Image 1 (cartoon, rainbow, N blue to C red):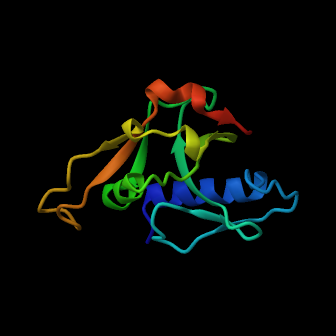
Image 2 (cartoon, rainbow, N blue to C red; image 1 turned 135 degrees about the vertical axis):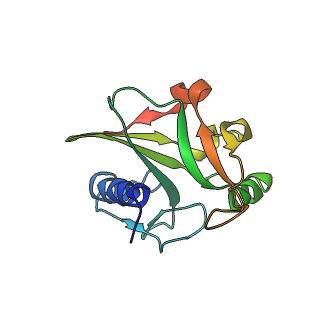
Amino acid sequence: MPTNYQITGQKGETFVIKNCTCPKCKKKEKTLRKLPPNFKCADLICDFCGYLAQVKTMNVKDVEIKPDRILGSASKPQEERMDAGIFFPLFIVLMHTNKKAVYYLPADLQVKEMFEKRKPLSQDAKRPGWQGFNYKIKDYKERMIRLI
């Protein structure tokens, strides 16, 4: 059974797929598709040009206010890609009741300092020692582009 975070994430991915075009090829048809669950560091692919992107979704009080921090995923795969100079573009979906906003953070405007490791999970957790990260975007909000 999916968690509330997973349900929220699925809603955000579906919203981007239905309402956004691929930022790379800009094909007018809806070419963005979901990747399989647990695909590392990316959620969507353009089935025309192969563009990959990450989607992060948050329930907020006001979709006009960009968050300071966004919950990321596993830190190790992200760190390995950053060390290789690979950053994935980010769609940020903010939701409040019936209002939604989509912000976009291109890969070439991301820096390693935006990624903040979280404390590893305790030994009592389902996945002891697993470590996630946060997108720390407080100082980089001007780099986010509002799409919707």
